[in-house]
Figure 1 (cartoon, rainbow, N blue to C red):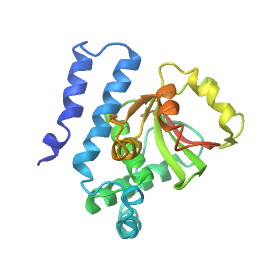
Figure 2 (cartoon, one colour):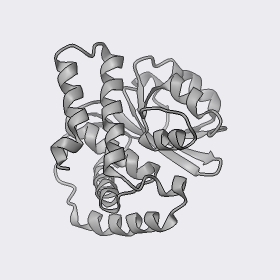
Figure 3 (spheres, helix red, strand yellow):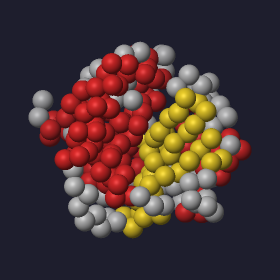
Length: 224
């Protein structure tokens, strides 16, 4: 299947947004997040190693990413950013995305990297990586958030918050989480989802998996 066909959902979604058939900021963000998340089913036929308990796939991805990263030059990224290290993260994200595609598998961070790069190339901002520590069974997790307002920006660089801080995230009604890894986990356990969630939906869906989060906001990108 060629690249255009693999990304047909994304192209079709952008067309529907342009034609006004997907309306409103939240609707547009959910639409593009869903389209990107669903492409992961084609891009990663082996799924997520830590869900499927195939650690060898994760080792292959990690080794390949190191080699790929060495061949990628940071380039001149014209970006507006909050939090440091963005150029290095774009390089890392691209390497993780390419390595997971080559392996046909990827855990949450590889999938988040793909989503981040895709949104960057499509011009959907603001975007940022959110990571969680102290996650039962999986230890940590990462996903991409589109449109989280700066009003929820921490006072200090990369602080960590407990679950009480999620109340402020819920009050961001147009923010959208794109998390194809979570889609794979939920589907394996019998819950049909499409990888795109409002923050409230995400908290409701993931309650039995994620508790007592320690949240870190990283690599916010305002525009290109």
